[in-house]
Amino acid sequence: MSSATLGNRNTNHKAIVAWIEETAKACQPDRIFWCDGSAREREALIAEGVKQGVLIKLNQEKWPGCYYHRSNPNDVARVEQCTFICTESPEEAGPTNNWAPPREMYQKLGGLLAGSMRHRTMYVIPYLMGPPGSPLTKMGVELTDSVYVALNMGVMTRMGQVAYDHLGDRDHFNRGIHTMLDVNPDRRFICHFPQDNTIISVGSAYGGNVLLGKKCLALRIGSYLGRKEGWMAEHMLILGVESPAGEKTFVAAAFPSACGKTNFAMLIPPAHFKGWKIWTVGDDICWMKPGADGRLYAINPENGYFGVVPGTNSKSNPNAMKSIARDTFFTNVALTPDFDIWWEGKDGPAPSQCLDWRGNPWTPASKEKAAHPNSRFTAPMRNNPALASEVDDPNGVPISAIIFGGRRAATMPLVFEAFNWAHGVYVGATMGSEMTAAAVGGLGQVRRDPMAMLPFAGYNMGDYFAHWLHMRKRIARPPRIFHVNWFRKDEQGNFLWPGYGENMRVLKWIVDRCHGRVGASEGPLGWMPRVEDFDFTNVREFGAEQFAKVQAINPEEWKRELVSQNELFVSLHATVPKELIFERELLVSRLMP
Ligand code: SAT
Ligand code: MN
Image (cartoon, rainbow, N blue to C red; front, top):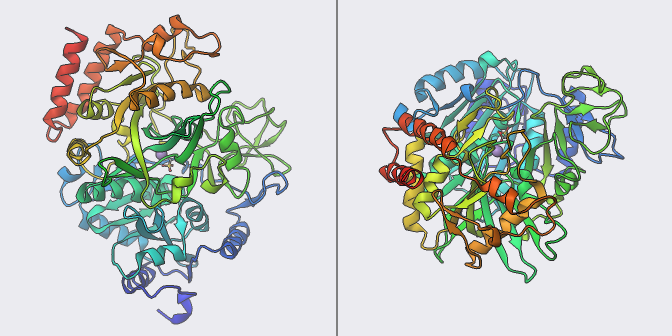
């Protein structure tokens, strides 16, 4: 390769340079651009994006520093059928993942990568998942031919020189290669090689498929490394609850994609909760490790929010509105003639005309949605007025409670607490949720989504449960484990719980349980708040009768639920830990004595 194509190389790390040269030789980009993460560079990349037509500059008075992007209509969500875990044996990947032999997959991808960046620029993106200096933090380098990916990685990660500095001359870094090809679903592969700490993604340009630090490194490769190295990579938000007395309690919560993690992480307590405050540590991913004091400590490896736009407004999530108010990329929302943007569920009336997410003319009379249901914002977390001061703490925050939850119209009560860690692992392992637009296919169907990790576990799900159970031995003071469901409905299809800010009432009970300050009654599912343990002050039209409805355990529904929970265990029979089979037996006998 001639030195002219090497561009502005800014590292001497031998292994990184050698791998980049090797990749460039295969992909043959016209130019290599080495990102340093500076503000000036961001301006230059944005100018390039606008020139290519990949970005549209939004009305800068309304949206300072914000840009608009439309993805290919065939490329709007994660595609699980194109996502592969390439371990040596299929058993290591397990029955819930697509598996391919590494050698075969490398060969196939080699064919697709060959010459794939001709006439294009290859961006070199050094990045950190986690704050610099944290023992949990991981370094990665993503090579991509997409300027949109380079810019979005700049928001979602700590990108640039800081990453080389953190790595120093160590050799432990993630290799990520992304090339768009012709964005053809038939040639779309998102492949993980956990043994090599390598990710190769081709044929897509959308979010979770291509921002390789996020789902690919932080969850799939991360969970694999976590098991090997004794920590946990989870699909969880992290928040801090501050009481009027200044006591801070940190909570991590796993909900599947598009089930309200961002809203919950940015919750604003209702007026009645005077002096209470919620601080956001993270809205999607949580890495946890036991600390010297026997507690579980968590960091948010990300630096930004890649959140669902539709439904975001100043009532549902005021802090998200502030987070996206500047320096944000919007993907697949609707564009108005004056370069404002719109989405279903935005404040104010719909525009009389605009272009929908595909770029087609749209009016309020149109049958189609203006914004894609999985349209996204990419916003810097530093914009969030409720950002926790601990986000850059290399030690992370001590977790007092872990919450599991899904989107369930029936069966699941608003809240209960598991009896102990092993029971909590069972509750997480049997989590179910109605499918959302964050992944292609199956919208609305209930599927088992253990710990919200079904699409993200980088190894056998049964072994993943065993890892959870093993971790208990390494955590002397484990968090309590809870299950919540904000989405239960009555026979008429109305939500039984008001949700949003009112979820603070549930959170308060959870926090008080962690501090041993509030009671509960023992039920078949776990500990449940009694009416007197729960605060209903000023919840509109909500009282003991409503509470009984939203907490009800319906035997017919639970018969079906138990069968459905078991289907997952049957599919994982070879690896599911026997402790969880015992937990199931205990649950059955509590429900049907
Ligand atoms: O598209 S992403 O995978 O990044 C978001 C999500 O599904 O949680
Ligand atoms: Mn997610």
